[in-house]
Image (tube, rainbow, N blue to C red; front, side, top):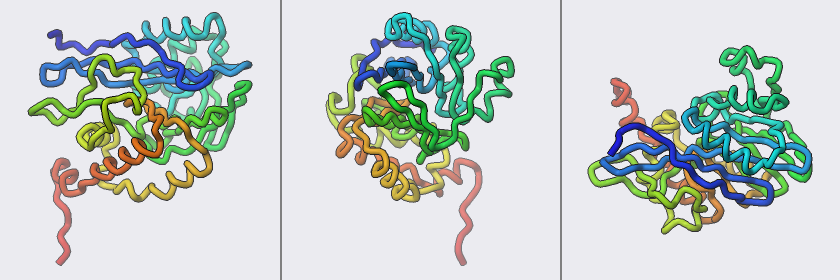
Length: 284
């Protein structure tokens, strides 16, 4: 099998009225198995304006561009909202700004003038609580309870009650292959909702990705953020949770909390500090 990382062309799926899931997958071999890893982005089509949440990974651009053409059907993209300035989430921003000359890059844009100074006049700062009226759809920037970077934001679309969580609640669709701790994602599962998968994800499908994407979870217990997350759900009634890495979660009362329980298992300060070449101070 070819050992080069590639892309797997997926069909977009409308997960709610006017909200499209574009689950472009990275494909890489894990223990001799072609493993799919979601790097999903989401397109919201309002009656007046459109918004793309995250931009996808650079090598995925041809598929993403074609997919946007098919869904937008001649309409323009008005807003591009990367959840945070990491390659998987923002690297196609300049391509999108070139393809859609009237589009603006929105959200916490503090870092982007250093990346793309030529587009500085098309950056639009939106802090937590800021809202964009798309016409029939209203998008709100909310604080990322589970942060990847200091500028990480989540998003919320109120008419369809969709919470966009970036690297929060990342999981894979299959447990690890024998002899490997990295979980896999089988072909044919790229556009399935969580309730359509064979079963609930187990800890081995969640913890590896959590530790890889969110290194700090080794040292900080997820329970620290439980109250904040519960308040967010109370303030933002949610039918769908849309992560960047993993299937869209539609069975909120079941899979969402199964994942949260597994996220707790990433907390292992002894292992994390040992990996960093240090030791924990011992109480006398």
